[in-house]
Image 1 (tube, rainbow, N blue to C red):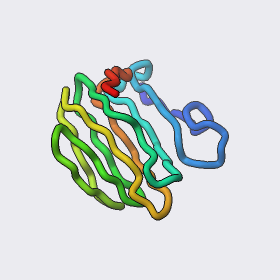
Image 2 (image 1 turned 30 degrees about the vertical axis):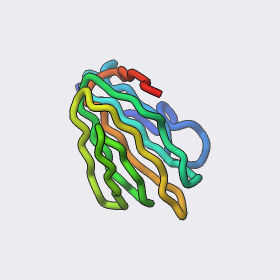
Image 3 (image 1 turned 60 degrees about the horizontal axis):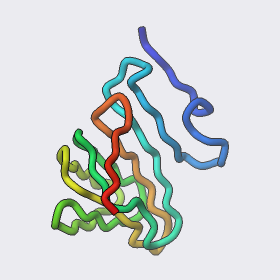
Image 4 (image 1 turned 90 degrees about the vertical axis):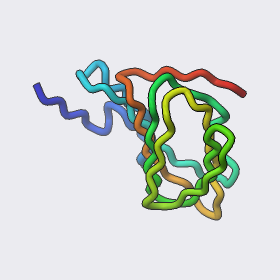
Length: 114
């Protein structure tokens, strides 16, 4: 059966496209996070997952730390972090950073490292 999930079921009523969705309850093997990070320097701290994570940069600029490598990404870029690799990212500014983060699992599993 096909599922359609309306925005009110996964996006908070903030007027922005940001929120989290876990697909396992709908038979999907992915989870999605829509991020909007307003301030430069903002972003998640170092963590890892037992599955790959794919980032789609919708707008802005980000500095990713993936393992021991630093990677700058901007609107239109896609970055894939392999399973088990520690990573974090931050908004480089000057404006907001918007990303879609796709987790290759039906529910979130995160190990925070800092």
